[in-house]
Image 1 (cartoon, rainbow, N blue to C red):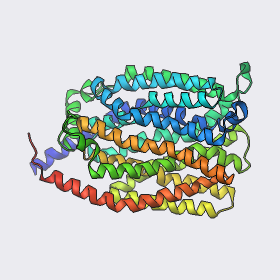
Image 2: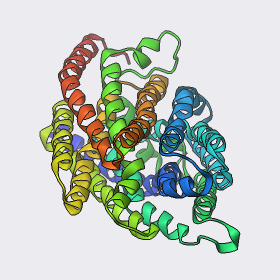
Image 3: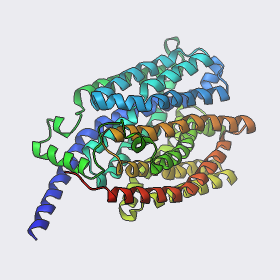
Image 4: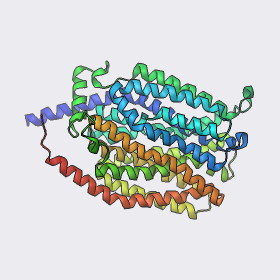
Length: 444
């Protein structure tokens, strides 16, 4: 009875420390990720204007939108290894300052090659941001809280979809002010705001619990102990642990499912404004506003699915169910002829697509730590980023072939079905990983 009482008191103390960390950390982390997402996808609003003003074709736009993810993916793991050496605060601040400057420089696009080049360099600058945020989660929060925390972090891109599109659309209404196109104003202003966020990160974000002046030593101790004590043995050398970071079956399979998810997610996000415009909705602000409906669905998903997960528990099965639901929703879209119903179906599909995201990272975080976590999480994100390249390009090819921006929903169906088929393989790999970990003696 006394032991139970001590345990309950420690759990309550940890819960209070966790709430304090959430209140202090999340606003800064969300601000950084919010602007990252806005700067990443604001180009979608400029799609038709870039065609008219600088002659960028639909296929060239898809390639340029996706090439961001190639450079991002190429530098994702190296960036995360540098982060592990110099610290998350310094690295996130550096990322925000450089990508903000390059995002503002998008106002100088003159044709296809300058478009490709700036998008490529923008991806290089932003590489490592998301794995760094996920790595911070492993330092601050226990495994039982991580799906919920990751869900909160995903509020940044989902809210960006809701308000970022109308915000960008409103900035584009500045067309002709001071002789600049509306899309030039959008890139310039949003890039400068991102640089201000980088300065905020530098001065306010602590590296780890013991660096936070707003935590007591006891609170820092219990946060660190619960965060690092829940998972596998802490690995701080990549040499000799390459397989643990990159080649374990569960990592490879979850990375492939994440790739398919990102083909769907990014493909929809980058092409939704043109889909909306094709439904005879006009005006930059109105198109941005209607496109933001996908963000409402995504927000519901990242908040609702972690709640379902706490009751359902089986993360892998839930990943498969959500992929299947995405396929069904996209199939209904394809056979529907009502614009209102189609917009609603895209919003619903984003509940399933984005609701899956916290589950991917919860499965991975539970089975890696230390430098192996920094590298392994970056590897998974790298594979997903390739989906960010393939998604817009595949949607662009589908539109070019049919003349219909909504034809990309066939890509969504195909990717979701393959994701469902991969789920049993992931379940088997996770069981094997957990069985192997259970056989390794714990050292103290």
